[in-house]
Amino acid sequence: MKKVVVNIFLVTLMTSFLLIILYPQDTREEIQSEETILPDIETPKITIYIPSEEDYMKQIKQLTERYDLSLTSSKQAAYYDNLLGDIEIQLNEIAQKNATIYASLEFNKFKKEHDEIRGIYLNGYLFNNPSKRESIEEILMSTNVNTLVIDVKTDNGHILFDTDVEEVTYLNNERVKFSKNEIQDLREIKDLYLIARLVVFQDPLFAKFFPEEAVFDSRLNKPYSQNGQFFLDPSSEKVQNYIINIAVEACRLGFDEIQYDYIRYPDSSSKFMRFDTKNDFENRVNNINSFLSKSKQILHGEGCLLSADTFGFILTNKQDGGIGQNLESIVENVDFISPMVYPSHYTNGSFGYQNPNKHPYEVITAALTDALDRGVDKDKIRPFLQGFWHSNEDIRNNIKAASDLKMDWLIWNILSVYELDSFSKLSE
Image 1 (cartoon, helix red, strand yellow):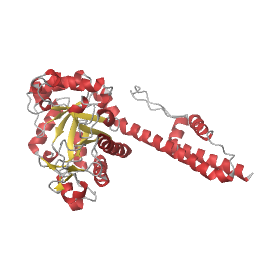
Image 2: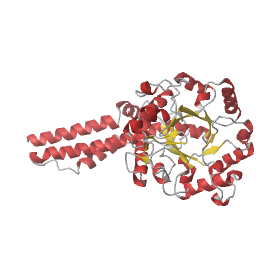
Image 3: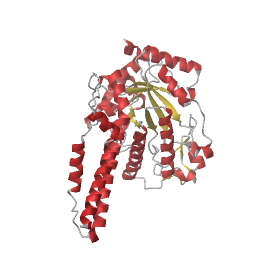
């Protein structure tokens, strides 16, 4: 009799726990209240299904039916451990799905109202430069550009806002250019989608102060350098935690999305590079994507989405190019990818063009189509387009290539130099 009472108590306890976690009281009361008045609004493209208590009870019944609650006492403890472990796994999965839904709500709303993400890059060092801000604001006010990509951690290893991240004390790498209030002030210009660009595995300051976390050069017996760039080991837990902590603070600063750049291994064939794990395809891809997956889960919990800049060639190359960027893997672990499909960066003969830089529309269309042909959802591809070494007409052709494929787009210019005529078609 005692065993039966214990079993009934445990099932009741689990049932109550699941209902409290999965079906908050205030939501239940709002749905059940006869006085609740539903506003007469257009049904959004994304509908969030809220299960009823009956649905939850069915799920709990299906879960508990897999377990025999009449076991002998010698087996009950292990059995209950399995039951509770299974429930915990399901709770974690549900929590992750809910976090993703909530993190996507504002983005989906923005897309519904503006149709496309149309963005330009603002160099974070120039955030408070009066003439630069004036030119950027003129573009925002005069065109349909509705998105800004702004540095929060730069190629030099500098963090451009006041941060409490522990390693900053040693690195002395704050170069404060803006605050939370100043980020929020940008939304006074117009309704904007704000993306924080965060350079990840290329960091000369971190490599200097924590050389054991950097890619090592066995020939020179010091951190590996490639044309003045210093790369951190993607498998380093210390590096990963450092980046995630910065990303979380940037999210809380008021950005809608965190965009990882240099999320890769060095693009080098040097035989003197040394890593903590074997430098092969499996380890490279696993180290990059496990980090992205962890980052996405944490950032979704903070209400931010996650994107990653990638080399353009990964849309065509089915391996990882030696840098850990494999298309099919990386798109599963971020919300969006931004392949840098700059025509000037493709070698002569690419896609049948002797000088790809002179054929921006054709080259970009071909590159993006390669990704679509591999089954990648177009809504997950938001290319970085070339805003340098091109005429206004060329830039418009960059944009047209992405828009004709019904993709969002961003324009890259390291100095954030843009002309209104590059975006004239957007205001027509």
